[in-house]
Length: 82
Image (cartoon, rainbow, N blue to C red; front, side, top):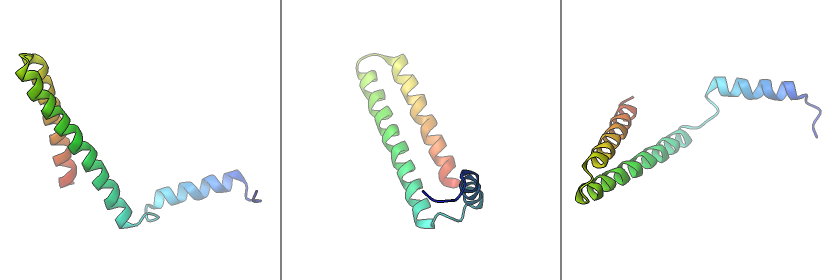
């Protein structure tokens, strides 16, 4: 174990988090790409669920899934433009 007190370690971590320069641009863009991919998969799932529910004559559930998918699409659009 090192002789550095825990308070000093926490202080260093807090300073690195405040600075924001400890991460490279490539890792930031890879993280955002992963985030976009997760949102895209969720949107595709909700659209497929909407179609399946509509074919099974469950129109209220279909409408709810459609609104949820549209909400995810709107959030994704706002994040991409930010």
